[in-house]
Length: 403
Image 1: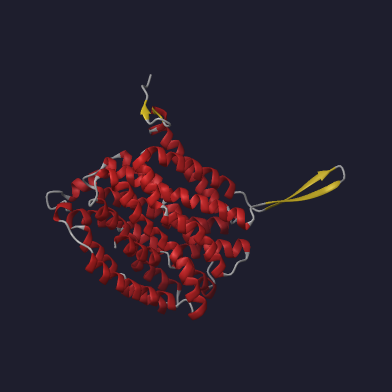
Image 2: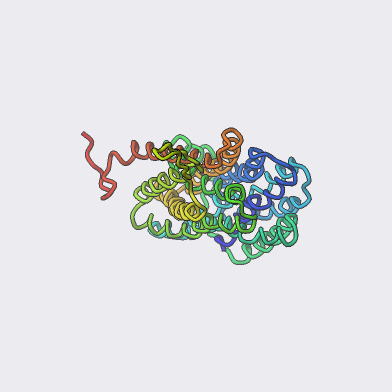
């Protein structure tokens, strides 16, 4: 039930990835404004994660989850009445609360399972990220058939039904609550732990990057390859769907091989994919003995989609492995730690689309979004090497003596 509820919340959270395209055309927005439009719900969903994690530890996940979902129903419906840019920014802020559901659900689910199964359990719950793909498969048909205004109206009704079902089919355990004995100051003390900041950096890629590219890819296919919104959204789902559904596989691998080893190889695979994706469409003229020869270098749509599909799988696994770190290192305050790390990942999902748009407006190169992500992954690989890898044999997982 938690996975279903999280899927619906993620559908709502990613709604502007599809309806934002007709809104952009109607309001004649530039790329930076479009980036701000699609990212606005992500801002609220990010900032609210830390307090939601603390509330979940204190009061339990069931009641927090229900109140959170119920609070988004009216703002979702009001999106359909927006006519000005600021209307969508304001309603997007309120709808973004749905994005905080991850922190609540991850702490709620993890505590029902023993330590050796928590990675898989959190991975299954995290498969709700596939709500991004559901939106790409469902919303374009609604837009083409009835107009974009119909999408938030349908989503508001779906959210209402989800709240009712969640309340009827979930349970509560008082033993899962931290209670009054844990103060806010004690919960926030986790911010001083450098490991928390490192895990936040990893998560800003595998989740923040996932959110950002899920929001950006439909428009990228339209602009770069000339698809209509329905075909573009379908191809974009080739990245979003495995990036959500296969998170459970990442949880299994993390339980079996360890969070460190899985995250290390996920980052390396991402680095290679992003290096190839960064190369812009290029026409090259080479002067030969027989005269000038023209060459075109660039990814066609099938190679591009295959690379995005592979990276979606890697990031699904990486999202689970980062949270395996958390359940291993912080078993008694998963809520607040997941809130901090989720906040960092969500802020990545908010800032990156705006930066994508600004880079396109500044450089005119659409693949600049992948260049930016390539740099972020490079920073994480260096950080991981200096803090973890150089002191251990990554293949065996055994710590080595430092001279």
